[in-house]
Amino acid sequence: MTDDRKVSPRVLAISWGHMDVEGLTPGKDFKLYPGGGRLWDWSETGTQHRPGVQPVDVEELLSYGATVVVLSRGMQLQLEIDPRTLALLGERGVAVHVAETVEAVQLYNDLALTQPVGGLFHSTC
Image 1 (cartoon, rainbow, N blue to C red):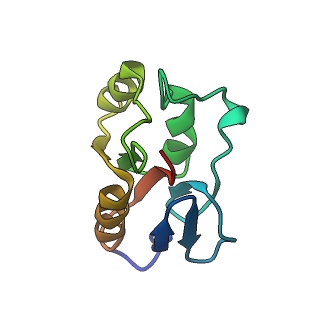
Image 2 (cartoon, rainbow, N blue to C red):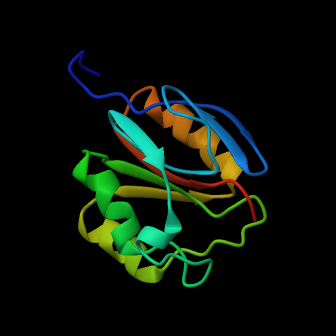
Image 3 (cartoon, one colour):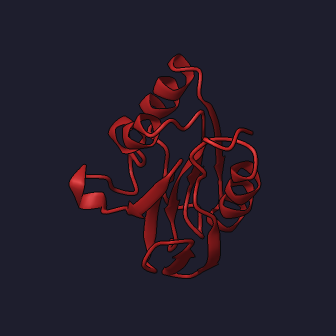
C-alpha cells in the first residue's frame, strides 16, 4: 500500500437499521469506496430487494477506483444481487464478495486495510 492511495472508510458500528462509518454521518444504508462514501438511497436507481443490487449501484464504487467490492445481502439475507451485477464486476476484473451484512462489514473492514475496496451495505432485512 502506498501513501497516496485513497483509503476506504471503516465501518465503526453496525446494528439493525443503523451504521456508523468513519468520517460520515450515521445512517441506515451506505455506499463506501476508496476516499469516502455516502448514504445509499435505493430510490436513486430504483433498487428493490428483488432483483436486488443492480449494475448501476456498483458503478459509483468502480468510478472511485474500487478493485474489490463487498455486497451485503441484509441482516436476514433478503436483498438479492442481480446476476447482471456479478457479470459486470467479472467483466471488469473486479473481485466480489457477497455476504450477510455483519459478515460483509467485517470482510470490508479487513480488506480496507490493504486494498481499494468498495461496498454496498443494507442494515435491515
